[in-house]
Length: 281
Ligand code: AMP
Image (cartoon, rainbow, N blue to C red; front, side, top):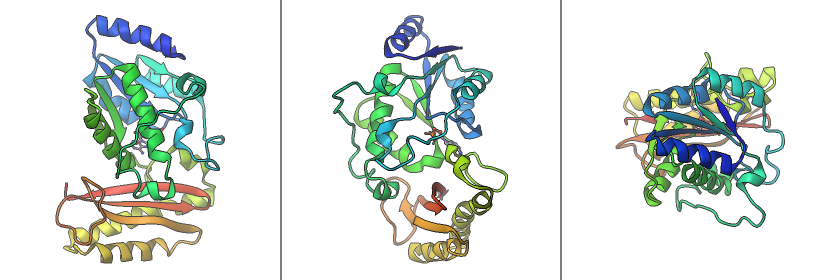
């Protein structure tokens, strides 16, 4: 497996692979890999000839005061995991490689990035779509994988790929969870043992909402109310949002009449966790 640190190095390999008629798969990550990331590699591998995993803690998707500096990193461990899962290359640039002095071009998907997580993190998604557009462009990938755990992100990326004519097949892979239901996340490493014990409340709350739907409840207000009531039972946990939205455009729903997503973000101590479940898709 090769490690590519610069854009020219990456371009050389992409050029050669394309010249040989090989298809390219991309798994974009911020590293500190867990089984969720590795499942994306496993899903993508059979769909391409050459698989690139990018590891880049993307500064533009963090606002000032967020956790950019303390975001967990362990490249040696990541490198071994990626190699064990059969990827062909890691693209591991530094910030300057991706954002040269004077950088001022962003990709913004109107309307989808200012709801749910975008309310609390208003500049987050423009950072995500910008870096993913750059990676699509640089790797000229035929297929790229993203996790359902970041449902809003998957919708934005699908929209961006369609709108900017990226000829990329987008795979959305199921959320990988710990045994107690907590969605795997690099940020789970911030949790103290006590907070870790409380963290499954988010998934349990979403499951409660899902059960209400399955039992025939379609009043989104009632479902939200029940979910919020449940989340409040755990000390040290505060709700950022718990929403019932249309699965296609993230519109807040009053009544569930088609595919919907129960999406939530909670603070467990100072750690913000997100998760979602899809209803009726
Ligand atoms: P990150 O490194 O957190 O930016 O995540 C990189 C990719 O892995 C994104 O497409 C995420 O949605 C995906 N991902 C993160 N956590 C999980 C998980 N628990 N299950 C599946 N995919 C995940």
